[in-house]
Every structure is written in C-alpha cells, then in structure tokens.
Length: 161
Length: 448
Ligand SMILES: Cc1cc2nc3c(=O)[nH]c(=O)nc-3n(C[C@H](O)[C@H](O)[C@H](O)COP(=O)(O)O)c2cc1C
Ligand code: SF4
Ligand code: FES
Image (cartoon, rainbow over all chains, first blue to last red; front, side):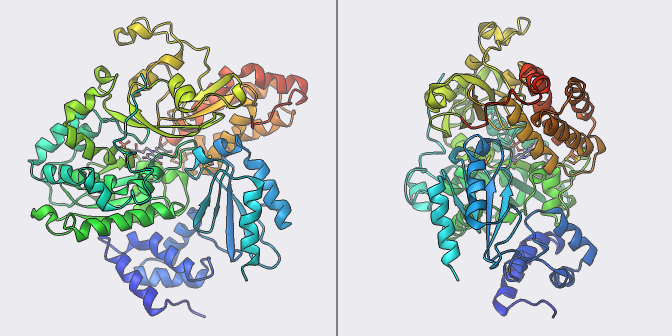
C-alpha cells in the first residue's frame, strides 16, 4: 500500500519545507518525519513518497537513506536501545552494560527480541562521555549507568505492551 | 592557571535555567541588541579583538573567519552552526544547548548580522533530541519577545533561525560534509577550495561555526572584545577569553568545566577532575577529542627556539596552558578541549583498538587511503589484541597511517592517523608485549 501522512503530519511536512530555500534540503527532516510515523523504518514506499513530495529521484532519496545509520531499512523493535561503546564509555564499563543487556534480553547486539519489543544496538560516541557509561532508549538518554539502572529501564520497556 | 568562570554555565544548575526569563535577568539579549545597533564592520572588529579561537577543533579565529565573508553579494548569506558534536570524548556543546540555549540563539543573532546573513541553520545531530527541543523552545521565546523575525529589536534586519537535524554520521561534523547533509545529500565532504565563505550552503556564501564559538559571543559583546581576550593567560598567543573544558575517562569527577584559557592539563585532571580513579597514576591523556595525538605525562616541552614558550621549556606538558598554538607547538592538538584520561591500571592497546574501530566505522569511504587504511589498521589491531600479530605488522601501522596523512579530501584522514601514529610510537613496548607474548601479557582491561 502506498505510504501517506495523516493530515496533521502533512502540516508538519509543509512547515519543514518552509524553512529551506529548496525542497531537497528537507530530505533528512522529512525522512525522519515519515520514519517516525512508519513504525520506525523507511521502506521503498516511503522512499517513493519522499521522492515525489520533494521532487527528487528515488535513487537520490535511497542514497541518503543508506548513508545515514539512523534510517532503518527494516522494521526494528518497538523500542530501540543503543549502548555507546566508544572509548570514554568503554573505559567506564560499557562492555559490562552491553553484555548485561544481551543477557537480560536474551539476544545479541543487532537483534530484536522475539516478541518484537526491543532492538539492541551499539552506538558510537553520543556526546555523553562525562556521564559514561550511557545508553539511548528511543529518544532519551540514560547516563552514569549501573546494571541495576539498566534492569529498571529494560523492565519498563518489557512491561510496555 | 585555574580561573573558573560562569559566562556559559551560570544557568546550568538552575531548574529553569534554559528559559528566557532567567537568561534576561543575567543581562541576556543586551549584547545582540547592542551589536545590531553597530555597523557590521564594527561587529567583526570587536569579535576579532576577543581572539575567540574556534571551539570546534581547528581553532581558527572566529572574527577573522567572519571577515572572509563577501561584503556585498547578489546571493543570500548563511550562518550554519555545527552542533553535530560527535568527536569521541567531546560532550560540551550538548550542555550549552540543553542548559543555556539562549546563549546560542543570541550568539546566532550577532553572527548573522556580522556576516550579512538573514538565516541561520543549527545542524544538530539527530540523537540530541533534548537539545533540539530546547533550541526550538528558545527560538519561540525569543520570537515572542520580538528578538527574531522581521524586525529584531525593532531593527529592519530580518533574522530567522532554524534547527536542522542529522541522521547519524560522525563525518557530518566536518564542515563541508555538514553542508552537503544540510542540503539534503549524502554527508560526503567536498574538496576545498572553494571554501564555504565563497560557496557554502546552497551554493551561497556561508560561515560554519561551532556551538560554543557562537554561544560565547554575547559575553564578548557584553565585556568588550579586548577585556574578554585579556581573561586568558594566552592573550599573547591570540587565544583569548574563557571556554569549556571537558574531562572524561579515569578521573574521579568527569564533567564539563568553564575556566579562563590558560588552564593546564594538570589542573583539569587533578583540580577539576578530582584526580585519577582509585588514586592510580596517570598513564596518558588525549588532550582534545580522540583525533588528537595522545600525550604521556613524562613528556616535556622542548621548544627552545620559540620565545613564546620561554618559561615552559623543560616543564611537563601537564603544566603547559591548554591553547590552540601551545598544543600545536608540542606536536599535539587542542581540538575540542575535552580530554580523555587513562589510568595506569588500564591497557593502552585496547584504547587504540577501540578508537581505530571507531574510525574504520565512520570513514565516509570517498578516499582510498582513508577507507582502506582505517580498515587495515583496525584489522592489524584485531590481530594484536588476539595475540596473533607480528612485529612486521606493527611497523605497517606506522606506514599505513603515514600514507593516509595529507592524502585525503578532508581532515578525517589525519584525525584517524594521528591517534594510530602516536599510540604506536608512545606505547610501542605495550604493543610489542602483546606480539611477543602471543597475547598472554594481556592482564589489564580498559576499565580502571
Ligand atoms: C571529521 C571531523 C569531524 C568534525 N566534527 C565537528 C563537530 O562535531 N563539531 C564541530 O563544531 N566541529 C567539527 N569539526 C570541525 C569543523 O569542520 C569546523 O572546523 C568547525 O565546525 C568550525 O567551527 P569553529 O571555527 O567555530 O570551530 C570536525 C572536523 C572533522 C575533520
Ligand atoms: S578522508 Fe575519509 S572521511 Fe574524509 S572524505 Fe576521505 S574517505 Fe571520507
Ligand atoms: S564515548 Fe560514549 S558518549 Fe562519548
């Protein structure tokens, strides 16, 4: 089925377009907007939609989607968890946090829990090195993490139906 | 010399410190009002006197950069703020956007006026959702007050500020890559020249500045450029004012601290950072984000022929004031001024292994030496850590990194080569131990 936006989200799209001198510049913000309303991923229908809206070739939009790590080309879990693994976090126990997540969720990095609830990933430095170790859950940061903190956060996600 | 300041951080601990009312109570928006009442040339001159060296890593003088913008042109001009903060170890810009966003918005007004721009884009990396929300909130508050829009402060000089978002790519912090990304393209760096001041965003004259560089401008115009510059112990190096210093890794109190330029690494690590975790010894420090060469505390300043370094010659690098030219002088870099500290309980081989994995992952792949070189170095280090590398391969790291240096489109290549070269030179013995012992020398981890 062809992708479309709700009337309200369509208004947001128009507001984004108004910020730039041309339509192409809206490419990344509009892709985010669509991804947020499409179960967190960008498929060929979304690419086609964005290409038509912004008067770009589908190839251009696809090129953008594949360049950036935060556009999902496959449907991820309902919640996305990223554990930062870069140096400052690694020096303060990111490995332990990551392994704890794997054990707790019963999956490896890059995988989604069988019930489709949580996708676990690693991230590179998230500008939170002074409060390491840290992880991002959907749009929120959790900093100065202990394994107990991780349990509390994951429990809440797992309870969420 | 440790001289703490609170020009940017005064709002950090207040629960509503990100709102316009407390900001204005501290004199906020008076500087933009003042600057917009001055001639454009005079604004640039005042900024030059402040000697604000770019806080994004390259340390270029901000006022001078502004002066490169054409005086008259048929095309619109743009101010683009680099809020892509992604250099490993760097976490200062985020604190400004979350906890003092109005300083950036006010700085953008001053910057736009100085370079003849009517529009400013703040390019924020996507992950910083709270930063984006706080900036949009600040923009709305400023607009309600009449500080933004068609007639800011009643002056017929329209200014609009927009928050733009990235989508996850460290390379987009490089300014030409950032411009491509802003235009809705893949974030691949462009060849320079042309420079952004001639051909920047949307093919128009543009200035790209770091968040902190712009956020400090209201302070500059409040104090006067010269008085601001004089705050610094490195005023004579044309490195003025105060700035944010970060410290992370194996210290007791990691965090962001604000102080006058002139602070030393020893003060940052021991006085502000509280000293090394578990009172261990300092093994090494990467002074300003991961792309800067690593330094060991045994190193001393050895520049007898440079008069500016007179009193520092022979002293430990820990006692050299952190400045753009002082650290360039000793063969490292100040970068973003956010230090990563390694205790002697930790394994430096694992540190460089972690960093080279980062660079391999983040190379945009346009240049063969960078794309292939980062991969080769990572693979050799994989073998080192597994105890399967040869001494010959250790030497190859040096060769590969040297071949990247200077042979790429953007400075990412050098930024990846510097840590590799410096770790291999300064931790040769530790790396060789892995090779000779087949990995059985590995008893330490990265955590201390
Ligand atoms: C690989 C790479 C990544 C960079 N990342 C950032 C960044 O995240 N933030 C930033 O302000 N500057 C970054 N820079 C520096 C910018 O290219 C540019 O010099 C800076 O934004 C200019 O602003 P300033 O003069 O105010 O410092 C990066 C440079 C390179 C080569
Ligand atoms: S140096 Fe590396 S990151 Fe920069 S353009 Fe070349 S391949 Fe891309
Ligand atoms: S290294 Fe993890 S946030 Fe910077």
